[in-house]
Length: 295
Picture 1: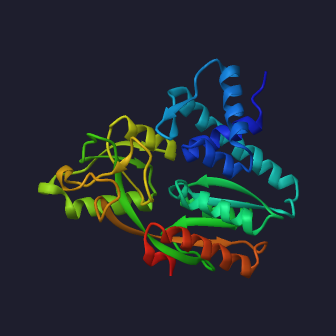
Picture 2: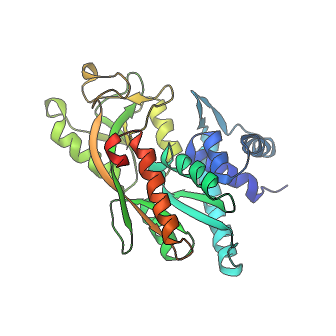
Picture 3: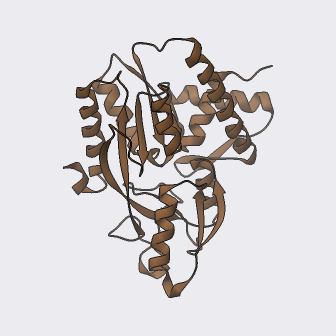
C-alpha cells in the first residue's frame, strides 16, 4: 500500500485553503475528485483527516500531521521533477502567500482560466519568503507575497487587515503564523497602540499553515489577523478588540488592524500583457472588499 502524490496534493490543498472547492480550483480538478482523494487517504490510513466546519472544513489532529508530511513529500517530489524534467509549455505555477487563500487566489484562478483557456495553472500556497524564492529559483511563474519588495515586482495594493475570531474568543490571545510574518507584525503593533486598558496580547499558538490557524481560532483559543474578505463563513467573524464595540460581521471598521502591501512578480514565461492582466484581476477582486483598491 502506498500514498499517491495526487492524493497527498489534494490533502495539502485542502489544508492550505481550508475549503474543498477552493482546493479543487487550485488543483484544476473537480471537488468530487478532491473529496475522493481525501477519503482514499482516510481508508488507507484508517483515521479521519477532516471534518466539516461551517461552509468549510477543519483538519483533525491526524489530518494536521498528514498535511505537514504531505507538504514535505510534495516539495521533494516537485523539486526533483523540476530538476529533471522541462516545464510544460502550457502550464504556469502560481506561488502565493497563504494569506491570499480565502478569496484573492480563488478569484485570480477563476479569472485566469476564463481569460487564458489554453493555459493550465498550478498553485503552491506558502510563506511570502518562499513564494519569492520559488520565483527566483524558476520554480514558479507568478508570485504573490507580502511586504518585502524585490526587483521587478509590481505593487498590487495595500491590503486591509482585520481581527477574526468566533463567539467568545478572548481578545488578548493571538493565534499567529510563525515568524517571519508581515501580518503578525502589523497586528501586534496595532494591538500595542490600541489595546483596551493597556492590556497585553499573548500569542497562545504559533502555526505553520492557515488550516492550523483557523482550527485553533475555531476552538476559541484566540483571535487571528487576516486579510479582510467579503464575508467569513460560520463560525468565523470579524471581531473588535472591544467586544461591545462591534461584533457585527464586516461592517464599518470593526476589527480593522491596518494594511500590508501585496506585491506581484512574474517570470520571463509571463508576457508583459499578461502581467498587467493579472494586476487588473487582482485589483478588481480586492476592490470588492475595499472599493479604493480597484482603481
